[in-house]
Image (cartoon, rainbow, N blue to C red):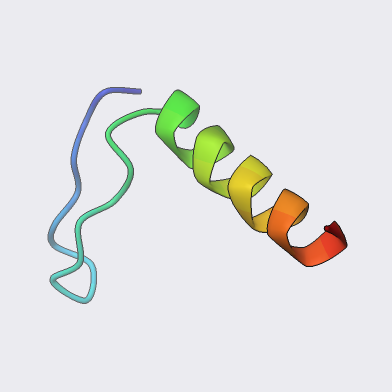
Length: 33
């Protein structure tokens, strides 16, 4: 999953699942901090 999709909403998708997980973890910690 290293494909960058920019066709949807012209928005860049995560380069990989790792990037998405990192962002999710950051959001989760910020919310429960």
